[in-house]
Image 1 (tube, one colour):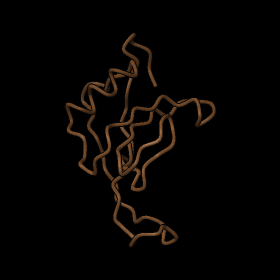
Image 2 (spheres, one colour; image 1 turned 180 degrees about the vertical axis):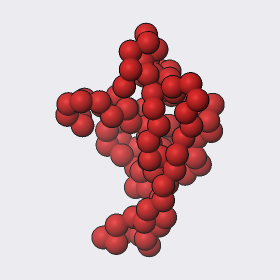
Image 3 (cartoon, rainbow, N blue to C red; image 1 turned 90 degrees about the vertical axis):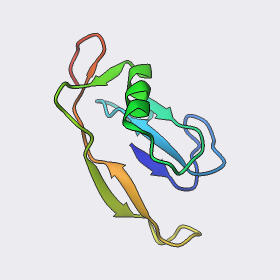
Length: 100
């Protein structure tokens, strides 16, 4: 999960900052399931993240939590360098019980 500070074009173009949740699976990045929240710099709540995962047919593995790391945006962006939050990793499983 990461914030797209300048918006995104995939799966749809947004006009400003938004958060996206990606499910990393084997294969091409273009094939990863993705959920995009409406344009906003606000971090989605734990409940909103759970709803987004469920809409992609995934849930957190019981006993796991979201882990966060911070990074700075690239200096070539047309705005000042910002600190961004990126969810490092969390274990999920398919709603049908399969593991990822």
